[in-house]
Figure (cartoon, rainbow, N blue to C red):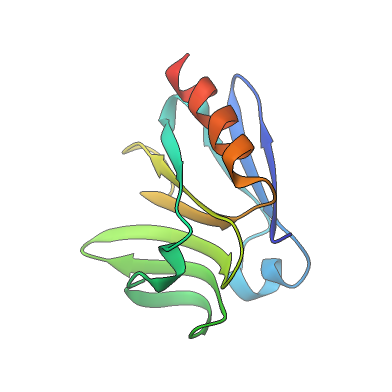
Length: 119
């Protein structure tokens, strides 16, 4: 597991696990649920272009942790190749445009996020 996710009616909290905190320079990302637009399961996300790496770690083909800038949009990545990756779309007031996260049971996490986002 790369990330712990906590989701309730008021906020989504992403907590990187272990050294991912150090590599990505983030202990926690908190997003109000009114800024969560939805989530998708994307097993091919690790093959996508990430953009310019700002603080973080990039080991091509293996692991990406940190902030990336692409086409004027800032995204947070904490993924590993071969893991279950979700993409969380965020609103304009959120700290990032998207979160790319490796999680356990991606489809269930996506369903939970989308249920809260649509409420």
